[in-house]
Length: 106
Picture 1: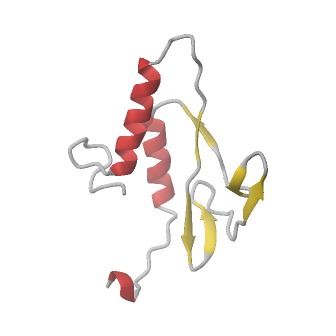
Picture 2: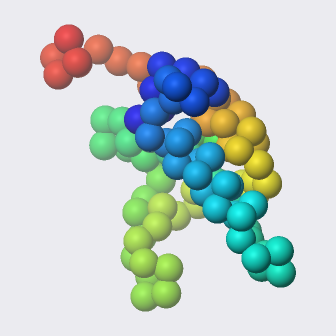
Picture 3: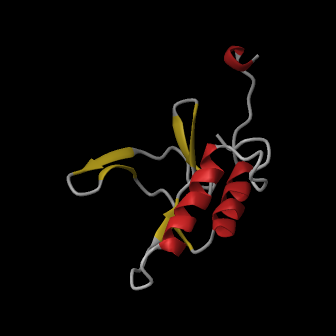
């Protein structure tokens, strides 16, 4: 989903392209509009949900609320203002990911 190089537009995957398109749409919108952009980054590994922005938060739970819908309780949300801030958060979170060998990706 990230592609081989998230900072190179020719080699970035779906997620970085979506990030750049979102901020492009914000820049092209009516200047009187105000936007709030937040990022969360988690991983589900061995049936456990881990917060990749704050790796101390493990075994998080999925909740449902009539207003919010489905969400991950206590998952860190960071406000961001640029594409670069999101990419830096993703890079930071990638260092916290579990990397394991399974028969499916052998």
